[in-house]
Image: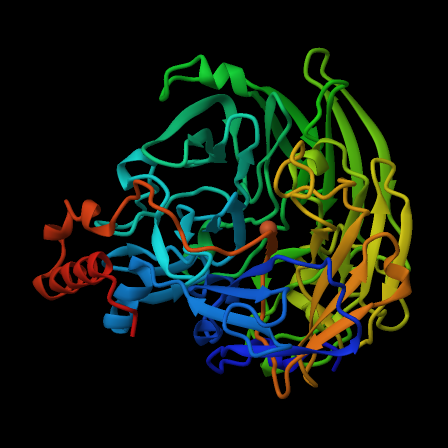
Length: 566
Ligand SMILES: [Fe+2]
Protein backbone atom coordinates (compact mmCIF):
# COMPACT_ATOMS: atom_id res chain seq x y z
CA UNK A 1 0.00 0.00 0.00
CA UNK A 2 2.46 2.66 -1.06
CA UNK A 3 0.07 5.65 -1.22
CA UNK A 4 -0.25 6.97 2.35
CA UNK A 5 -3.69 6.31 3.80
CA UNK A 6 -3.25 9.40 5.96
CA UNK A 7 -3.69 11.44 2.77
CA UNK A 8 -7.44 11.55 3.31
CA UNK A 9 -7.43 11.51 7.10
CA UNK A 10 -10.22 13.85 8.16
CA UNK A 11 -8.61 14.93 11.44
CA UNK A 12 -8.52 18.66 12.10
CA UNK A 13 -5.17 20.09 10.95
CA UNK A 14 -2.95 21.44 13.73
CA UNK A 15 -0.01 23.77 14.27
CA UNK A 16 3.39 22.18 14.89
CA UNK A 17 6.97 23.18 15.55
CA UNK A 18 9.22 21.12 13.29
CA UNK A 19 12.83 20.39 14.13
CA UNK A 20 15.85 19.28 12.14
CA UNK A 21 16.01 15.51 12.47
CA UNK A 22 18.82 14.84 10.01
CA UNK A 23 21.45 16.91 8.23
CA UNK A 24 22.14 20.56 8.83
CA UNK A 25 19.69 23.30 7.97
CA UNK A 26 21.53 25.83 5.75
CA UNK A 27 21.72 29.30 7.28
CA UNK A 28 20.96 30.86 3.90
CA UNK A 29 17.74 28.86 3.41
CA UNK A 30 15.22 31.50 4.45
CA UNK A 31 11.74 32.83 3.88
CA UNK A 32 8.36 31.15 4.04
CA UNK A 33 6.85 28.06 2.42
CA UNK A 34 3.13 28.66 1.82
CA UNK A 35 0.78 25.89 0.74
CA UNK A 36 -2.82 25.70 -0.46
CA UNK A 37 -5.00 22.73 0.38
CA UNK A 38 -8.61 21.68 0.74
CA UNK A 39 -9.76 21.32 4.34
CA UNK A 40 -10.00 17.60 5.12
CA UNK A 41 -13.47 17.83 6.66
CA UNK A 42 -14.94 17.54 3.16
CA UNK A 43 -12.89 14.56 2.02
CA UNK A 44 -16.01 12.42 2.25
CA UNK A 45 -17.51 14.41 -0.64
CA UNK A 46 -17.28 13.42 -4.27
CA UNK A 47 -13.97 15.19 -4.93
CA UNK A 48 -11.27 16.21 -2.43
CA UNK A 49 -10.39 19.19 -4.62
CA UNK A 50 -13.56 20.97 -3.49
CA UNK A 51 -12.87 21.27 0.24
CA UNK A 52 -12.71 24.74 1.71
CA UNK A 53 -9.36 26.44 1.35
CA UNK A 54 -6.63 26.05 3.93
CA UNK A 55 -3.42 28.01 4.14
CA UNK A 56 -0.35 26.31 5.59
CA UNK A 57 2.85 28.25 6.24
CA UNK A 58 6.23 26.87 7.24
CA UNK A 59 8.74 29.48 8.37
CA UNK A 60 12.25 28.57 7.25
CA UNK A 61 14.06 30.42 10.04
CA UNK A 62 13.95 28.59 13.37
CA UNK A 63 12.43 30.39 16.31
CA UNK A 64 10.22 32.72 14.27
CA UNK A 65 6.45 33.15 13.97
CA UNK A 66 5.86 31.79 17.44
CA UNK A 67 8.06 28.68 17.22
CA UNK A 68 10.18 27.73 20.19
CA UNK A 69 13.96 28.06 19.96
CA UNK A 70 15.25 25.73 17.27
CA UNK A 71 11.71 25.01 16.02
CA UNK A 72 10.30 25.81 12.60
CA UNK A 73 6.74 27.17 12.79
CA UNK A 74 4.20 25.12 10.82
CA UNK A 75 1.03 27.18 11.04
CA UNK A 76 -2.33 26.58 9.38
CA UNK A 77 -5.72 28.19 9.13
CA UNK A 78 -8.96 27.62 7.29
CA UNK A 79 -9.58 30.63 5.06
CA UNK A 80 -12.38 32.43 6.88
CA UNK A 81 -14.02 33.64 3.67
CA UNK A 82 -17.72 34.45 3.28
CA UNK A 83 -18.17 30.96 1.79
CA UNK A 84 -16.58 29.22 4.78
CA UNK A 85 -18.44 31.40 7.28
CA UNK A 86 -21.83 30.87 5.65
CA UNK A 87 -21.24 27.13 5.57
CA UNK A 88 -20.16 27.06 9.20
CA UNK A 89 -23.45 28.69 10.18
CA UNK A 90 -25.73 26.68 7.88
CA UNK A 91 -24.00 23.47 6.80
CA UNK A 92 -27.40 21.94 6.14
CA UNK A 93 -27.98 24.04 3.00
CA UNK A 94 -24.62 23.25 1.33
CA UNK A 95 -24.37 20.32 -1.08
CA UNK A 96 -21.12 18.85 -2.41
CA UNK A 97 -21.24 17.84 -6.08
CA UNK A 98 -18.68 16.69 -8.66
CA UNK A 99 -18.44 20.31 -9.80
CA UNK A 100 -18.18 22.15 -6.49
CA UNK A 101 -20.19 22.90 -3.37
CA UNK A 102 -23.50 24.63 -3.97
CA UNK A 103 -26.05 26.36 -1.72
CA UNK A 104 -28.91 28.85 -1.90
CA UNK A 105 -26.23 31.54 -1.34
CA UNK A 106 -24.49 30.44 -4.54
CA UNK A 107 -21.29 28.54 -5.30
CA UNK A 108 -18.64 28.11 -2.62
CA UNK A 109 -15.35 29.82 -3.45
CA UNK A 110 -12.99 27.22 -2.01
CA UNK A 111 -9.77 29.13 -2.85
CA UNK A 112 -7.84 25.96 -2.08
CA UNK A 113 -5.51 25.37 -5.02
CA UNK A 114 -2.50 27.66 -5.26
CA UNK A 115 -0.83 30.42 -3.25
CA UNK A 116 0.04 33.43 -5.42
CA UNK A 117 2.50 35.80 -3.74
CA UNK A 118 2.63 39.37 -5.04
CA UNK A 119 5.43 41.16 -3.20
CA UNK A 120 4.34 41.01 0.42
CA UNK A 121 0.71 40.26 -0.51
CA UNK A 122 -0.62 36.71 -0.69
CA UNK A 123 -3.55 35.48 -2.80
CA UNK A 124 -5.13 32.03 -2.75
CA UNK A 125 -6.73 30.81 -5.93
CA UNK A 126 -8.87 28.20 -7.60
CA UNK A 127 -10.36 27.54 -10.98
CA UNK A 128 -13.98 28.42 -10.34
CA UNK A 129 -13.81 31.44 -8.09
CA UNK A 130 -12.17 34.80 -7.62
CA UNK A 131 -8.69 34.82 -6.08
CA UNK A 132 -8.93 35.73 -2.40
CA UNK A 133 -6.35 37.63 -0.39
CA UNK A 134 -5.13 36.43 2.99
CA UNK A 135 -2.86 38.08 5.51
CA UNK A 136 0.55 36.35 5.15
CA UNK A 137 1.16 36.74 8.88
CA UNK A 138 -2.17 35.91 10.54
CA UNK A 139 -3.52 33.93 7.52
CA UNK A 140 -6.91 35.62 7.97
CA UNK A 141 -9.16 36.38 5.01
CA UNK A 142 -8.90 39.93 3.67
CA UNK A 143 -11.17 40.00 0.63
CA UNK A 144 -11.95 38.68 -2.84
CA UNK A 145 -10.27 40.14 -5.93
CA UNK A 146 -12.65 42.56 -7.63
CA UNK A 147 -16.31 43.20 -6.95
CA UNK A 148 -18.68 40.44 -8.01
CA UNK A 149 -20.15 42.75 -10.64
CA UNK A 150 -16.73 43.11 -12.33
CA UNK A 151 -16.68 39.43 -13.25
CA UNK A 152 -18.67 37.44 -15.78
CA UNK A 153 -20.62 35.03 -13.61
CA UNK A 154 -21.77 31.55 -14.65
CA UNK A 155 -25.11 31.64 -12.84
CA UNK A 156 -26.13 28.04 -13.57
CA UNK A 157 -28.38 28.24 -10.50
CA UNK A 158 -29.33 31.22 -8.30
CA UNK A 159 -26.19 32.80 -6.83
CA UNK A 160 -27.40 35.88 -4.98
CA UNK A 161 -24.25 36.14 -2.83
CA UNK A 162 -21.60 33.63 -3.94
CA UNK A 163 -20.88 33.87 -7.69
CA UNK A 164 -19.48 31.01 -9.75
CA UNK A 165 -16.60 32.67 -11.61
CA UNK A 166 -14.87 30.43 -14.13
CA UNK A 167 -11.28 31.59 -13.91
CA UNK A 168 -7.93 29.90 -13.35
CA UNK A 169 -6.01 28.64 -10.35
CA UNK A 170 -2.83 30.12 -11.82
CA UNK A 171 -3.10 33.83 -12.55
CA UNK A 172 0.22 35.61 -13.13
CA UNK A 173 1.70 38.82 -11.79
CA UNK A 174 3.13 41.05 -14.51
CA UNK A 175 6.50 42.26 -13.23
CA UNK A 176 6.66 45.23 -15.61
CA UNK A 177 3.12 46.47 -15.17
CA UNK A 178 2.60 45.29 -11.57
CA UNK A 179 -0.85 43.91 -12.38
CA UNK A 180 -2.49 40.52 -12.09
CA UNK A 181 -3.48 38.86 -15.36
CA UNK A 182 -6.05 36.11 -15.26
CA UNK A 183 -8.97 34.74 -17.28
CA UNK A 184 -12.71 34.62 -16.95
CA UNK A 185 -14.68 32.36 -19.24
CA UNK A 186 -18.36 31.80 -19.77
CA UNK A 187 -19.82 28.90 -21.74
CA UNK A 188 -16.45 28.27 -23.33
CA UNK A 189 -15.87 31.88 -24.41
CA UNK A 190 -12.49 33.09 -23.17
CA UNK A 191 -12.07 36.54 -21.65
CA UNK A 192 -8.75 37.98 -20.54
CA UNK A 193 -8.85 39.77 -17.18
CA UNK A 194 -6.58 42.31 -15.52
CA UNK A 195 -6.50 43.66 -11.98
CA UNK A 196 -4.28 46.45 -10.73
CA UNK A 197 -4.14 45.36 -7.09
CA UNK A 198 -7.04 47.59 -6.10
CA UNK A 199 -10.29 48.61 -7.74
CA UNK A 200 -12.17 46.97 -10.58
CA UNK A 201 -11.23 43.90 -12.59
CA UNK A 202 -11.26 44.61 -16.34
CA UNK A 203 -12.20 41.92 -18.85
CA UNK A 204 -11.98 41.60 -22.62
CA UNK A 205 -13.62 38.88 -24.76
CA UNK A 206 -11.07 37.18 -27.00
CA UNK A 207 -12.18 36.88 -30.62
CA UNK A 208 -12.41 33.21 -31.52
CA UNK A 209 -11.17 32.23 -28.04
CA UNK A 210 -13.15 29.11 -27.29
CA UNK A 211 -12.28 26.86 -24.35
CA UNK A 212 -13.68 23.36 -24.90
CA UNK A 213 -12.71 22.16 -21.40
CA UNK A 214 -11.20 24.48 -18.80
CA UNK A 215 -8.46 27.00 -18.05
CA UNK A 216 -6.34 25.78 -15.16
CA UNK A 217 -3.39 28.00 -16.06
CA UNK A 218 -2.35 31.17 -17.78
CA UNK A 219 1.25 32.12 -18.45
CA UNK A 220 3.01 35.17 -19.82
CA UNK A 221 5.99 36.63 -21.62
CA UNK A 222 6.93 40.27 -21.64
CA UNK A 223 4.45 41.01 -24.44
CA UNK A 224 2.05 38.06 -24.53
CA UNK A 225 -0.49 36.20 -22.42
CA UNK A 226 -0.77 32.50 -23.22
CA UNK A 227 -3.92 30.55 -22.39
CA UNK A 228 -4.38 26.88 -23.24
CA UNK A 229 -7.37 24.59 -22.96
CA UNK A 230 -6.75 22.27 -20.00
CA UNK A 231 -7.59 18.63 -19.37
CA UNK A 232 -10.22 18.99 -16.67
CA UNK A 233 -13.26 17.83 -18.59
CA UNK A 234 -16.79 18.25 -17.31
CA UNK A 235 -19.43 16.36 -19.29
CA UNK A 236 -23.08 17.45 -18.83
CA UNK A 237 -24.19 14.24 -17.13
CA UNK A 238 -21.48 14.68 -14.49
CA UNK A 239 -23.33 17.78 -13.28
CA UNK A 240 -26.12 15.52 -12.06
CA UNK A 241 -23.93 12.72 -10.70
CA UNK A 242 -23.43 10.67 -13.86
CA UNK A 243 -20.22 8.89 -14.89
CA UNK A 244 -17.72 10.17 -17.40
CA UNK A 245 -18.01 8.62 -20.84
CA UNK A 246 -15.36 10.49 -22.84
CA UNK A 247 -11.66 10.98 -22.11
CA UNK A 248 -10.18 14.45 -21.78
CA UNK A 249 -9.48 16.00 -25.17
CA UNK A 250 -6.22 14.70 -26.59
CA UNK A 251 -5.35 18.05 -28.11
CA UNK A 252 -6.61 21.55 -27.65
CA UNK A 253 -6.29 25.17 -28.63
CA UNK A 254 -3.80 27.58 -27.15
CA UNK A 255 -4.19 31.33 -27.52
CA UNK A 256 -1.53 34.02 -27.59
CA UNK A 257 -2.91 37.46 -26.70
CA UNK A 258 -0.88 40.65 -26.94
CA UNK A 259 -0.85 42.62 -23.70
CA UNK A 260 -0.57 45.96 -25.49
CA UNK A 261 -3.60 45.13 -27.58
CA UNK A 262 -5.61 44.54 -24.42
CA UNK A 263 -4.40 47.81 -22.96
CA UNK A 264 -5.30 49.71 -26.13
CA UNK A 265 -8.84 48.30 -26.14
CA UNK A 266 -11.62 49.52 -23.85
CA UNK A 267 -12.63 46.72 -21.43
CA UNK A 268 -15.59 44.73 -22.68
CA UNK A 269 -14.58 45.06 -26.33
CA UNK A 270 -13.20 42.17 -28.36
CA UNK A 271 -9.48 41.61 -28.70
CA UNK A 272 -7.93 39.35 -31.33
CA UNK A 273 -5.46 36.55 -30.63
CA UNK A 274 -3.18 34.06 -32.35
CA UNK A 275 -4.44 30.47 -32.18
CA UNK A 276 -2.31 27.33 -32.12
CA UNK A 277 -2.95 23.64 -31.36
CA UNK A 278 -1.12 21.65 -28.74
CA UNK A 279 -1.07 17.97 -27.87
CA UNK A 280 -1.19 15.90 -25.85
CA UNK A 281 -3.24 17.29 -22.99
CA UNK A 282 -1.98 19.85 -20.45
CA UNK A 283 -2.78 21.48 -17.12
CA UNK A 284 0.42 23.37 -16.24
CA UNK A 285 2.63 25.29 -18.65
CA UNK A 286 5.16 28.06 -18.18
CA UNK A 287 6.49 30.60 -20.66
CA UNK A 288 9.97 32.07 -20.56
CA UNK A 289 9.39 35.76 -19.85
CA UNK A 290 11.93 36.93 -22.42
CA UNK A 291 10.19 36.65 -25.80
CA UNK A 292 12.84 38.37 -27.91
CA UNK A 293 13.29 35.28 -30.09
CA UNK A 294 9.75 33.94 -29.94
CA UNK A 295 7.30 32.69 -27.33
CA UNK A 296 8.85 29.67 -25.60
CA UNK A 297 6.60 27.57 -23.40
CA UNK A 298 7.38 24.56 -21.22
CA UNK A 299 4.38 22.21 -21.20
CA UNK A 300 3.92 19.65 -18.45
CA UNK A 301 1.63 17.32 -20.35
CA UNK A 302 -0.88 15.22 -18.42
CA UNK A 303 -1.16 12.52 -21.03
CA UNK A 304 -3.87 9.99 -20.18
CA UNK A 305 -4.30 11.24 -16.62
CA UNK A 306 -7.66 12.40 -15.35
CA UNK A 307 -7.93 14.53 -12.25
CA UNK A 308 -11.66 14.98 -12.88
CA UNK A 309 -12.29 11.26 -12.28
CA UNK A 310 -12.12 9.95 -8.71
CA UNK A 311 -12.24 6.59 -6.97
CA UNK A 312 -15.72 5.60 -5.84
CA UNK A 313 -17.36 2.91 -3.73
CA UNK A 314 -17.16 -0.04 -6.07
CA UNK A 315 -14.07 0.79 -8.09
CA UNK A 316 -11.41 -1.71 -9.08
CA UNK A 317 -7.82 -0.65 -9.70
CA UNK A 318 -5.61 -1.15 -12.74
CA UNK A 319 -4.42 -4.52 -11.48
CA UNK A 320 -7.94 -5.79 -10.77
CA UNK A 321 -7.88 -5.24 -7.01
CA UNK A 322 -10.78 -3.58 -5.18
CA UNK A 323 -9.87 0.06 -4.49
CA UNK A 324 -9.15 0.75 -0.83
CA UNK A 325 -11.96 2.80 0.75
CA UNK A 326 -9.23 4.82 2.49
CA UNK A 327 -8.35 6.30 -0.90
CA UNK A 328 -11.93 7.09 -1.89
CA UNK A 329 -11.96 10.39 -3.75
CA UNK A 330 -8.38 10.05 -5.04
CA UNK A 331 -8.13 11.52 -8.53
CA UNK A 332 -7.00 9.49 -11.52
CA UNK A 333 -3.24 9.11 -11.89
CA UNK A 334 -1.53 8.88 -15.31
CA UNK A 335 -1.96 5.74 -17.33
CA UNK A 336 0.94 6.72 -19.61
CA UNK A 337 4.47 7.97 -18.93
CA UNK A 338 4.99 11.67 -18.36
CA UNK A 339 5.92 13.99 -21.17
CA UNK A 340 7.39 17.47 -20.84
CA UNK A 341 8.01 19.59 -23.93
CA UNK A 342 9.56 22.93 -24.80
CA UNK A 343 7.77 24.55 -27.70
CA UNK A 344 8.43 27.84 -29.44
CA UNK A 345 5.64 29.79 -31.09
CA UNK A 346 6.24 32.54 -33.64
CA UNK A 347 3.05 34.59 -33.53
CA UNK A 348 3.97 36.57 -36.65
CA UNK A 349 4.45 33.56 -38.91
CA UNK A 350 2.42 30.88 -37.15
CA UNK A 351 5.50 28.67 -36.99
CA UNK A 352 5.71 26.14 -34.16
CA UNK A 353 9.02 24.54 -33.24
CA UNK A 354 9.38 21.65 -30.80
CA UNK A 355 12.74 22.32 -29.21
CA UNK A 356 12.95 19.61 -26.58
CA UNK A 357 11.10 16.74 -24.98
CA UNK A 358 11.65 14.92 -21.70
CA UNK A 359 10.18 11.42 -21.52
CA UNK A 360 11.47 8.27 -19.84
CA UNK A 361 9.02 5.40 -19.87
CA UNK A 362 10.72 3.59 -16.99
CA UNK A 363 11.65 6.45 -14.69
CA UNK A 364 9.25 9.34 -15.12
CA UNK A 365 5.73 8.44 -14.02
CA UNK A 366 3.07 10.60 -12.40
CA UNK A 367 4.67 14.00 -12.21
CA UNK A 368 2.90 15.94 -9.57
CA UNK A 369 4.16 19.52 -9.40
CA UNK A 370 7.25 21.61 -9.95
CA UNK A 371 9.60 24.12 -8.35
CA UNK A 372 10.90 27.10 -10.28
CA UNK A 373 12.62 30.38 -9.64
CA UNK A 374 9.60 32.71 -9.86
CA UNK A 375 11.67 35.89 -9.60
CA UNK A 376 11.49 38.16 -12.63
CA UNK A 377 15.09 37.29 -13.44
CA UNK A 378 14.44 33.58 -13.00
CA UNK A 379 11.45 33.63 -15.33
CA UNK A 380 13.35 35.72 -17.86
CA UNK A 381 16.18 33.20 -18.13
CA UNK A 382 15.34 29.92 -16.38
CA UNK A 383 18.13 27.40 -15.87
CA UNK A 384 16.43 24.55 -13.96
CA UNK A 385 12.97 23.02 -13.77
CA UNK A 386 12.56 20.86 -10.67
CA UNK A 387 9.74 18.33 -10.38
CA UNK A 388 8.40 15.64 -8.09
CA UNK A 389 7.02 12.36 -9.42
CA UNK A 390 4.84 9.85 -7.56
CA UNK A 391 6.02 6.88 -9.60
CA UNK A 392 3.87 4.26 -11.35
CA UNK A 393 0.84 3.77 -9.11
CA UNK A 394 -1.68 1.24 -10.43
CA UNK A 395 -3.78 1.55 -7.27
CA UNK A 396 -4.56 5.14 -8.27
CA UNK A 397 -5.94 4.11 -11.66
CA UNK A 398 -9.43 2.64 -11.88
CA UNK A 399 -10.89 0.26 -14.40
CA UNK A 400 -13.47 2.98 -15.13
CA UNK A 401 -10.63 5.25 -16.24
CA UNK A 402 -9.04 2.53 -18.30
CA UNK A 403 -12.35 1.93 -20.02
CA UNK A 404 -12.86 5.61 -20.83
CA UNK A 405 -9.26 5.86 -22.13
CA UNK A 406 -9.20 2.37 -23.70
CA UNK A 407 -8.25 3.61 -27.17
CA UNK A 408 -5.35 5.76 -25.94
CA UNK A 409 -3.46 3.83 -23.29
CA UNK A 410 -0.55 1.63 -24.32
CA UNK A 411 -0.38 -0.93 -21.52
CA UNK A 412 2.88 -2.34 -22.85
CA UNK A 413 4.56 0.78 -21.42
CA UNK A 414 3.47 -0.01 -17.88
CA UNK A 415 6.37 -0.90 -15.58
CA UNK A 416 6.29 -4.43 -14.16
CA UNK A 417 6.13 -3.22 -10.58
CA UNK A 418 5.55 0.05 -8.80
CA UNK A 419 8.35 2.57 -9.30
CA UNK A 420 9.70 4.92 -6.64
CA UNK A 421 8.72 8.57 -6.29
CA UNK A 422 11.38 10.99 -7.47
CA UNK A 423 12.70 14.47 -6.95
CA UNK A 424 14.18 15.43 -10.31
CA UNK A 425 15.72 18.35 -12.16
CA UNK A 426 15.63 19.12 -15.87
CA UNK A 427 17.92 21.75 -17.32
CA UNK A 428 16.40 24.64 -19.22
CA UNK A 429 15.68 25.09 -22.04
CA UNK A 430 16.89 21.72 -23.33
CA UNK A 431 14.95 19.57 -20.81
CA UNK A 432 17.82 17.21 -20.10
CA UNK A 433 17.29 15.21 -16.92
CA UNK A 434 20.34 16.35 -14.99
CA UNK A 435 19.65 14.86 -11.56
CA UNK A 436 17.14 12.75 -9.71
CA UNK A 437 16.73 11.26 -6.27
CA UNK A 438 14.55 8.29 -5.41
CA UNK A 439 12.25 8.40 -2.41
CA UNK A 440 10.83 5.35 -0.65
CA UNK A 441 7.91 3.54 -2.27
CA UNK A 442 5.59 4.58 0.54
CA UNK A 443 6.52 8.27 0.29
CA UNK A 444 4.18 10.73 -1.37
CA UNK A 445 6.03 13.93 -2.28
CA UNK A 446 3.91 17.04 -2.55
CA UNK A 447 4.35 20.41 -4.22
CA UNK A 448 8.03 21.43 -4.09
CA UNK A 449 9.35 25.00 -4.00
CA UNK A 450 12.59 26.62 -5.07
CA UNK A 451 14.26 28.95 -2.55
CA UNK A 452 17.00 31.19 -3.95
CA UNK A 453 20.19 31.71 -2.02
CA UNK A 454 20.60 35.25 -0.59
CA UNK A 455 17.33 36.67 -2.01
CA UNK A 456 17.19 40.43 -2.24
CA UNK A 457 20.92 40.69 -1.61
CA UNK A 458 21.49 42.71 -4.76
CA UNK A 459 19.51 45.93 -5.02
CA UNK A 460 19.73 45.80 -8.80
CA UNK A 461 17.65 42.62 -8.81
CA UNK A 462 14.07 42.03 -7.73
CA UNK A 463 13.32 41.05 -4.12
CA UNK A 464 12.55 37.44 -5.02
CA UNK A 465 15.81 36.91 -6.90
CA UNK A 466 19.02 35.44 -5.55
CA UNK A 467 22.47 36.35 -6.77
CA UNK A 468 22.38 33.70 -9.53
CA UNK A 469 18.77 33.52 -10.71
CA UNK A 470 17.29 30.73 -12.80
CA UNK A 471 16.65 27.87 -10.40
CA UNK A 472 20.04 26.20 -9.94
CA UNK A 473 21.47 28.31 -7.11
CA UNK A 474 19.52 27.70 -3.93
CA UNK A 475 17.37 24.95 -2.48
CA UNK A 476 14.47 22.72 -3.43
CA UNK A 477 12.11 22.03 -0.54
CA UNK A 478 9.86 18.99 -0.78
CA UNK A 479 7.00 18.23 1.63
CA UNK A 480 6.70 14.45 1.89
CA UNK A 481 3.64 12.61 3.16
CA UNK A 482 4.08 9.21 4.72
CA UNK A 483 1.91 7.28 7.18
CA UNK A 484 4.97 7.11 9.43
CA UNK A 485 5.09 10.90 9.61
CA UNK A 486 5.20 14.05 7.53
CA UNK A 487 8.56 15.63 6.74
CA UNK A 488 10.03 18.49 4.75
CA UNK A 489 13.25 17.75 2.89
CA UNK A 490 15.74 20.36 1.68
CA UNK A 491 17.86 19.61 -1.39
CA UNK A 492 20.70 21.50 -3.04
CA UNK A 493 19.07 22.83 -6.22
CA UNK A 494 22.37 22.39 -8.05
CA UNK A 495 22.26 18.62 -7.53
CA UNK A 496 19.18 16.97 -6.04
CA UNK A 497 20.77 13.55 -6.66
CA UNK A 498 22.83 14.06 -3.49
CA UNK A 499 19.62 13.53 -1.54
CA UNK A 500 18.27 15.72 1.22
CA UNK A 501 20.81 17.87 3.00
CA UNK A 502 18.41 18.47 5.89
CA UNK A 503 15.05 17.12 7.03
CA UNK A 504 12.40 18.68 9.27
CA UNK A 505 9.86 16.65 11.22
CA UNK A 506 7.54 16.86 14.19
CA UNK A 507 6.54 13.85 16.31
CA UNK A 508 3.29 12.10 15.33
CA UNK A 509 2.57 14.61 12.59
CA UNK A 510 0.77 13.64 9.43
CA UNK A 511 -0.64 16.14 6.97
CA UNK A 512 -3.63 15.60 4.70
CA UNK A 513 -3.62 16.10 0.96
CA UNK A 514 -1.93 19.32 -0.19
CA UNK A 515 -2.12 21.17 -3.49
CA UNK A 516 0.27 23.87 -4.74
CA UNK A 517 3.03 25.54 -2.74
CA UNK A 518 4.95 28.79 -3.19
CA UNK A 519 7.84 30.63 -1.61
CA UNK A 520 7.82 34.12 -0.14
CA UNK A 521 10.91 35.92 1.16
CA UNK A 522 9.01 36.93 4.31
CA UNK A 523 5.55 36.92 5.90
CA UNK A 524 4.59 40.30 7.28
CA UNK A 525 1.16 41.63 8.31
CA UNK A 526 -0.93 42.91 5.42
CA UNK A 527 -0.85 46.62 4.71
CA UNK A 528 -3.83 48.81 3.92
CA UNK A 529 -5.38 48.49 0.47
CA UNK A 530 -8.82 49.23 -0.90
CA UNK A 531 -10.43 45.79 -0.71
CA UNK A 532 -13.87 44.44 -1.59
CA UNK A 533 -15.89 43.59 1.50
CA UNK A 534 -18.64 40.99 1.61
CA UNK A 535 -20.89 43.73 2.96
CA UNK A 536 -20.39 45.55 -0.36
CA UNK A 537 -21.95 42.61 -2.20
CA UNK A 538 -25.28 42.18 -0.44
CA UNK A 539 -27.50 43.87 -3.03
CA UNK A 540 -29.29 40.57 -3.78
CA UNK A 541 -29.65 39.36 -0.21
CA UNK A 542 -33.40 39.92 -0.49
CA UNK A 543 -33.64 36.94 -2.85
CA UNK A 544 -32.89 34.61 0.05
CA UNK A 545 -35.38 33.19 2.54
CA UNK A 546 -35.46 35.35 5.66
CA UNK A 547 -33.44 32.92 7.81
CA UNK A 548 -30.61 32.67 5.26
CA UNK A 549 -30.63 36.41 4.63
CA UNK A 550 -30.18 36.92 8.35
CA UNK A 551 -27.20 34.55 8.36
CA UNK A 552 -25.63 36.45 5.45
CA UNK A 553 -26.03 39.76 7.26
CA UNK A 554 -24.43 38.24 10.37
CA UNK A 555 -21.46 37.02 8.30
CA UNK A 556 -21.01 40.44 6.70
CA UNK A 557 -21.05 42.11 10.11
CA UNK A 558 -18.61 39.58 11.58
CA UNK A 559 -16.19 40.08 8.68
CA UNK A 560 -16.40 43.86 9.03
CA UNK A 561 -15.79 43.62 12.77
CA UNK A 562 -13.02 41.00 12.48
CA UNK A 563 -14.88 38.35 14.49
CA UNK A 564 -12.91 35.08 14.18
CA UNK A 565 -14.51 32.12 12.42
CA UNK A 566 -15.81 29.54 14.87
FE1 LIG B 1 -2.36 23.68 -10.70
